[in-house]
Amino acid sequence: MPFSFIKTEIEGLTLIEPKVFCDGRGYFFENFKKSDFIKNSIEADFVQENCSKSTKGVLRGLHFQKNPYAQGKIISCTKGEILDCAVDLRLNSKTFKKYLLFNLNEDNKHSLYIPKGFAHGFLTLSDEACISYKITGGEYNKESECGIIYNDETLNIDWGIDFEPVLSDKDKVLRKLSDLKREELF
Image 1: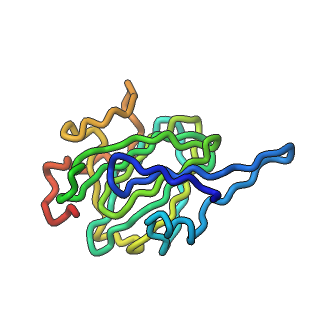
Image 2: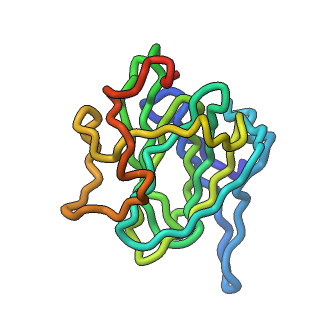
């Protein structure tokens, strides 16, 4: 199999390690193969693919789309390095409000599957990072976008930084988890 699917302590959140073939010319690996993903209980009906580029110190998130436009994501870092964060927002989950951090970079070529019901964000660790993410579920819907401020003390995410990250104007005014309405969660 061209992938290792590593289950995490949060149900549904899966780290994906591809098998990489290297030689003097460079490398080759399969980044996605629908049949393998389905065999490993990962939704593979993608409706959109997004790419972003960020400079060092940029923090994007924590973002999610409310129902009925909730999205699952497969996140890959194709250039540079990021610290990726997924927060469980499923009210009936035994890991509700728990987060996990993952180092995704161009060298390890890992991807992260984040199912519907999670908030997602990342911090750029390298001088520049390019991110690609495939989306399942609903296409982007502006009225459905939502998020949680990155430094919410309820979540207490350890981003490992001693500086103020660079945020978009939109991300600067995200609410705390405690300010979200129950119907905005999953």
